[in-house]
Amino acid sequence: MRKKIVTCKLLRRIRVTISAVILILSMGILTACSQAPESATIIAGSTSVQPYAEILAEEYMALNPEAVIDIQGGGSSAGITATQTHSANIGMSSRALKDDEKNLWNVEIAKDGLVLIVNPRNPIQNLTSDQIRDIYAATITDWSQLGGTKSKINIIAREEGSGTRSAFTELIMGEEEITPKAIVQDSNGAVRQLVADDPNAIGFISLGLVTDEVKALHLDSIEATRENIMNGSYRLSRQFLFVTDGEPIGLDKKFIDFTLSSEGQRLLINEGLIPSEEGAEK
Amino acid sequence: MKSFKEKLSERVFLLIALSTLSVLALITVFIFIKGIPIIAKVGIINFVFGMKWAPSQGAYGIFPMIVGSVSVTIGAAIVGVPIAICCSIFLAEYAPAKLRNIFRPAIQLLAAIPSVVYGFWGVLFVVPMIRNYLGGPGLSILAGSIILGIMILPTIISITEVSLLALPRHYKDGALALGLTQWQTIHSLLLPAAKSGIVAAVILGLGRAIGETMAVIMVLGNAVALPESVLDPVRTLTTNIGIEMGYASGEHQQALFATGIVLFVIIMILNATAQYITRKR
Image (cartoon, rainbow over all chains, first blue to last red; front, side):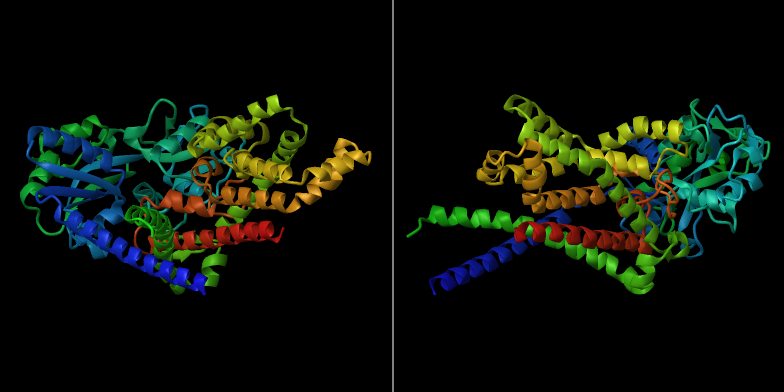
């Protein structure tokens, strides 16, 4: 009997305590909501664009100390969704907009080249688009089929959802699929590191991130250079976009204008990107 | 009559204890709410036994990753369990106190190394060794098994050692008095007597292996295909979440949470088995 009373008491105490917790939590949420900054621009999206947007924002805030620009990652799709739902003012995308996203206002802030890379010990210098597609579809599996030494090709791809992967799929693979046997790494840096270590590996990364540790392949006998991407002869490039819901206004517009100005474009060029056509017109 | 202070402190501690429970409840509820819709849409059989994972085309099958998780975990057991059990027998039965005092903290230190450091070591040391001496890309089930085999050592060693030391003193004294050698005593008396503790230790170790993420992302290669040999790259359930969460949205994100549900169920089963075995004793 005594035990039962104690249990009842304990139960009541737990109930009271739980209500207290809920009360405290809801108060916390209320305060957090009321403290949201009023005049900040939130930019969210592609992690490929993010580092460049951060450089732009840093420079812009140095020139305009009253401006507050907050940059978040999340990926192209997440950034576009955030723009549509107004949880971000500007979305960053490293892939082209899909049909149901075309109603968003968008501008190309820069172009980025994609480069196929192999180990410096690999004798191959050049591959055609068809050969690359066959490698990634696993119909060509040995370097000897391409005129290299006899050894199995270790294919390295990026993860599903990555803007780099979707640009590669769109520009090279067409209807074919990247083989599921491909090794998957989740950043440009990880792909580069693997290729630098493995003489039989092939991977694709951003042009701006190529270093001496790896060899950049020519594509259809055309070298991946800024000039060749700008004149369109090197075809493996993608756009970096800023998107907004409707014409940008206020701080959003000022920041986008800054990005497209010669000053903003120079910052991006210094980081290895290719200036956008719209920026060049100004 | 309890003083006000006493009551207050009791309440405060109760509140804090409840907060840990509520975090567990929140996470569980959240994972299930986020993940259930996609399982319902794809169908649980298609989700768990589907061979193709291509979220951009709406294909959500995680069977290759279940195979990946299981094969790497078995590999880790093959690498780690014999070493761990021998080590704990040595510590509990043979080692002089001086040596034990060096070994124990060293093994605890093994548990304190962050998993990303294990992964980094794996990429720079284990993976190139495999690539150079055994062939293949190096990123493989074998590399993951070696890294995880080492990572589960502290868990298995400490629990096994504790269950060996917990055996009544007279077991050993009696056996030795009857003229059994030390190895005979360990082999035919102590190990069978501590069996449930050892099995629980192994299961908890495997639970740690199957839940490990960071280190295996770095050394497994993450390919979503059924492996044909231990030198092939695989993806585990945890790495699937870890590697794709950055870009996932919508259904893709739900599918990652659903992967989490499957993982959650597997780990719950493992832990419940370990609890059941230890209780039965």
